[in-house]
Image 1: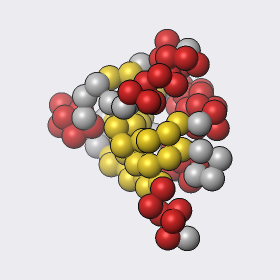
Image 2 (image 1 turned 90 degrees about the vertical axis):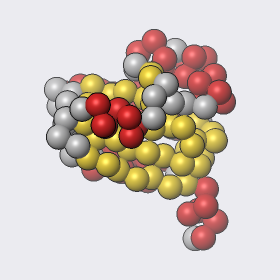
Image 3 (image 1 turned 30 degrees about the horizontal axis):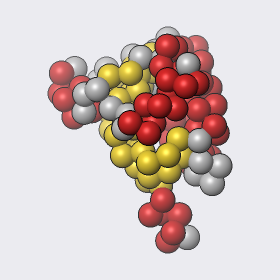
Length: 116
């Protein structure tokens, strides 16, 4: 189980207007259930921000989870925003067309939450 912990970590921060889910490591078939659980467990706010700055790999399972999260957040009256993806994740977002559907900002979540 220790190897799994080193591969993936998720942390949620809540402010009055936004929730930030910070993800670190690899989002793949082995970790996507924990990623999905963290997104669905996030309290409802106007915006759900997913900090991807420490993600080393985003697999197809992770892309599907982001698409489903966008739909779920929109059904709750909110918006999903992806924050600071590294180049390897940025390529996946561009290649899959996800970047055209979900807003992507290149700002750290601390500054985003501080601005709220």
